[in-house]
Amino acid sequence: MIKTLEKLLEWGGLRRDVAFLVVGGVSLLASIFCPDLFWVNPAWLAVIFCGLPIILEAVVGLVTAFDIKADVLVSIALVASLCIGETFAAGEVAFIMQLGGFLEEVTVARARAGIEKLVHLTPRTARVVTPEGGEQVIPAEQVQVGQVLRVQPGETVPVDGVILSGQTSINQAVMTGESLPVDKGPGDEVSSGTMNQFGAFEMRAAKVGEDSSIQRMIRLVQSADANKAKIVGIADRWATWIVVIALTAAALTWLFTGQIIRAVTILVVFCPCALVLATPTAIMAAIGNATRHGFLVRQGDALERLAQVRRIAFDKTGTLTFGAPRVTAVEPLGMEKEALWALAASAELLSEHPLGRAVVAGYKKETDHTPQKPEDFVMLPGRGVTARVGGAQVAAGSEAMMEARGVGLPPALKESARARLDEGCTLIWLAVDGQPAGFVALADTLRPDTPATIGRLRRLGVATVLLTGDNENAARTVAKAAGVDDFRAGCLPQDKLAQIGRYQAAGEPVCMIGDGVNDAPALKTAHVGIAMGGVGSDIAVEAADIALVDDEVKELPHLLALSRRMMLTIRCNLTFSMTLNFVAIVLAITGILNPVVGALVHNAGSVFVILNSALLLGFKKRL
Image 1 (cartoon, one colour):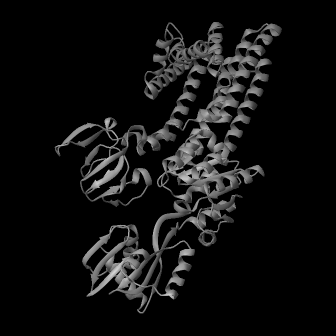
Image 2: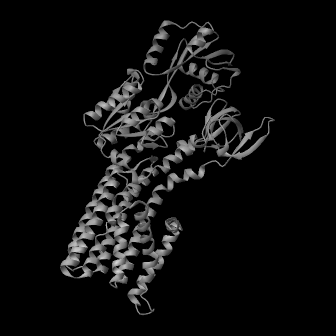
Image 3: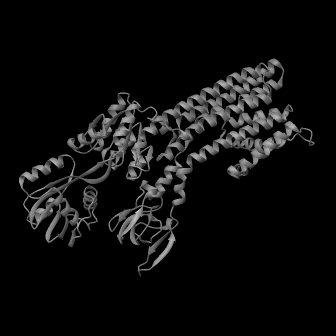
């Protein structure tokens, strides 16, 4: 019997609710303007279509889990109103409760609409390469680790893996928010759910099924459940007590006044609907707002905790910086700077290495020239490249490559290079015709919006600190450029953990933002952990409370301001609903309110609370 009732409640969804609301609304209007048109009061249709689902839900909750919530009191109020002949009041309560529930569902649906698009991006099939060199199409969930797959242009990558052969460009917007495709070749990793745009390639499956990137993102979506927020539990406990108080007040009023209509009115106005709706609607609306700004909130109470944060700790690489190299210095030896850079760019023109590409990109941007195409290009994995450029034999690579080729590096040049290394730079040494020619220094790039973001956080009254494993000089350079208040260099995972512990022991709740495996302990320990969902590791994302999908830290001040506005909205909702209940109960006891007017006043309060929460969807604070 209970299972049948549960199936009835699940049937139809939003379309069913809309249909029931239409029928209920029309029947109430008919009851007002044409009460004698039919042999029975038309408001009965509102009672049946809008009230019956509420009663069924109350019965299921009581029988299966003895769960005393708002629908129990609403059901009692409906039945009591019908018993004393107040059919219109019963229909009105049912209709407005159904309307309130519908508005909540719409708010939740709108809140989750952006992130639930990920679910539809789940790959359906995969091409498994057979031992004979052919291929077999199977469901993506049946792919096993180690299997070789073939991905054609225009297809979605079915699982996480490593490219074995072929060159291609992958659109990773679904995972990282990047608008431009990323070139991939043998040895590069690819993620499920991303789109293969150009070349065909073969890959070896590494993470399949529930372990794949797209499924990890979907789990983040599914865990965005407002019912996990601590403040929701408080509201639920209040609702339970209000049910008991309302029944007691109604019984005593009937006993002392002898007027059952007053007792019924108390039951109608004392339904804790607005109180119960006050918190989850605000949380889900805030989650929806955060989603549109690139955040996946795993738990509703993460935003509640974020509102309490007074210090934000940042990792450096991939968080305040892009995690991508760019040329910061060119140090020539015996030639002009532009000439050395031109030789380096030409030598690296055909290179697939990120450092080589950064050299070429930097040269094109700086000079607006295209490097000369090299001859006799050879790539030496793990060391560098050699090529003939304009008749000269150029070698570009590591210091070990120079030593292997018998190129002696002058002490003065080494001293200059050491200063760059102390700043966290990576060096590409160059030799021309077997003689040292200088080096190109590359470093990670500070995100252009980082200084402005730190400034906006400061205006919100939040202190900032940089916790990084880099050396002190590199940490100081980034901290100064970003405008961070303080920094700690050479941090191992346990050091970050200890530093956050010291802040929080001093009564300063900390939000930690990071992307690597070494950040996971700190993300877990911090009052709130935010992981860079695009570039971040699986472990970091799983340890965090919130994931930043597009890795744009510029939206962080908005998230902080949103969390504070959410808490203000919740407090306003709770205060309003409790005040409304108190005033209405006094008016009901004194006989000023009858069931019909009481239903209007009370349920209008529920609608107000939902609409007030829905304003969070469009919240945007200017800083």
